[in-house]
Length: 459
Ligand code: GDP
Ligand code: ZN
Image (cartoon, rainbow, N blue to C red; front, side, top):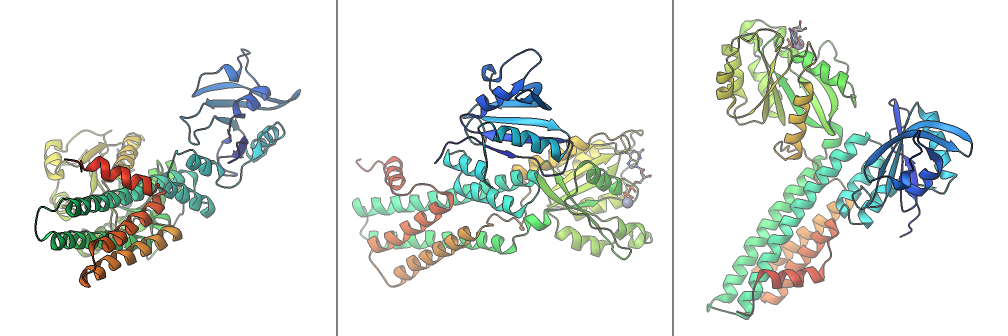
């Protein structure tokens, strides 16, 4: 690989008050150092890693921009190379001017996805993560969404690695059975083991492929339903989220719509927020909970935000809602903390069965940050498990998974036909290798090492 120093604008074009030009490569610090003057005369090349510096960028004698420069030395960077980020305010014109200046002074314009490619080449991320990010770059989605999908693809890698280690385990056991037969029916036992594992692998891969078919996450986000009695602050919550977080897509609520949807980006997690407001507020008391319709919306929810009012006692309606969300992932939002406390928090804790409780005053714009943190941490820890997850989003992965499925069938057919174990082993190993191509893990040496590290064959 070439070790040019590359540069590109890393903020979405034409948006936001701050623009960032990012450089990566061994000359990124010296290049910017030559162009940068700080009021104190401090040089960037003497700067400690992960520090930020105020100053001005000059092209020769010409002032280009007032900037903040972050210096990050490899390997603790996204690309594992030295990275410099030049933050400049102003719009696209000034960002472009900064980019042109660094390009005129030794950096090369990065190709699309090149930062990510370097991160992979330098072992910072694995192949499936790199591909996920590159797909996203191609899809021109929001920058923060790249982060989200990168992390999600980390989940794919984890799942694949788990499958692979299960396969390795059975291969190692087969090996032991063959070399050290302790039973007379070792052949039959080995067949049985391989069959179990092949069936397991098939099931898991099918599951992954199912999520690939749905491919919803990018379009739809995590389905998040806001529920609560009338007047507790559901619409206010939806509006606050939409205001604070750049909405990705906005659905204008039509007059006949009974749910209002808004797409927002919460700390890199794409959410489809659904306010059930229209369901309830327009109808009379009996219908208000709109049980049937709410159930339908709730059934499709990945996450529920249950809003209560700090200023009211818990009502039967609240209890009915608690009942309705039994077993679902939910965060309880106690809103209107600016008003006097009439709610019995003990009781909420009990009804909430250990779910997270976040306190907000949407009126005074307090608590939203904590709520966002709670959502993001549930998502990234995997607590929010949505069926709609695109663990697999990429054509190469899908085709490899199908290949692996075929090899699993070969194993099963082979067992059926009574093939000798060493033939079955080959097909089983093939599944392991194919899955390894998804994560880009190396193949043969690892198999051998694992076999020896897992089992002390010499005993
Ligand atoms: P919804 O019926 O659950 O959608 O509730 P809304 O969001 O429409 O809010 C109902 C009323 O409560 C509105 O008048 C809001 O301005 C008010 N409200 C919302 N949040 C707060 C809050 O944190 N404190 C106070 N005092 N009022 C609030
Ligand atoms: Zn409302």
